[in-house]
Image 1: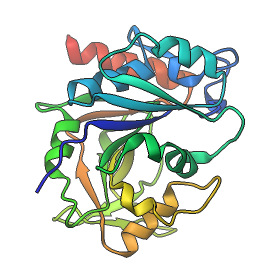
Image 2 (image 1 turned 90 degrees about the horizontal axis):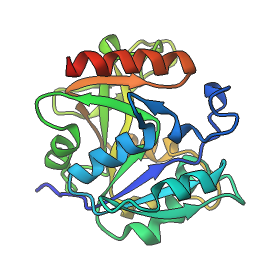
Image 3 (image 1 turned 45 degrees about the vertical axis):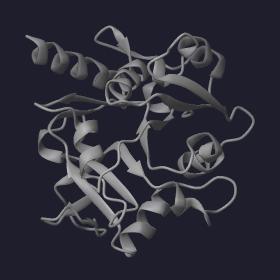
Length: 240
C-alpha cells in the first residue's frame, strides 16, 4: 500500500553560516541557483508532486521568506514561526505537527537541490512508501555522483531498501539527500523543545522501519558559495 502525501514540511529556519557572505543579509533558502531561489526549486517540485500545502519554518531573517512565499498557491505555504526559539530539525517538526495532519508527509530541507532523472523522485518516493513497513523513507544519493559532497556517506542500503547507519570509521555509498516521507505517529512521544531529527532516524533504524530509495538523477549539496556555482553548471548541462 502506498500513500500520496498532500502535505509537506520544508525546513527553512537555518542560519546559513557556511554560505556567508551570501547569507549576511539574506536567508539561505532565498539564495538563487539557475535563476530561482533554493526554496522555490523545492516548492515547485512539491507542487508538481501533488502537494497542496507546505509548512515552511522560519527563524533567521524570517520576514524575507514570509514575504517571498506570500503569493504562492501551488503549494499554498503555511508559516511555522520559530523566530523566538531555535528548535532544530526535530523540534521544528513537532511544532508543525498540528499543521501537518495525521497522514504521512514529505519532509524537505530548503537547501537541498537535485535534478530528476526519467521520473520525478518525489513521485517515486510516494509509490515506494509503505506505512505498514516504514516509519521513514529517505531519498538517498550515491556519494560518488553527487556534486559538492565530500563526506563518507550516511548509510549503506540493503537490496530491499532497508538502511544501515555508517559506523564511525566506515565509508558507505549513500548520503541522505535531504528529502523524506515520514509518518507523524512516530512523533507521539518525541522530546519537547529542540532536538535533531537524527534521533528519529536512529530510532526507526533500530526498529528496522527506516528505509531508503536511491535518487534517480543528480543531487547537489549546496552548502557554500562555491557550491552554488557548481550547481548552476550542473543545471545548465541538464537542459543543454
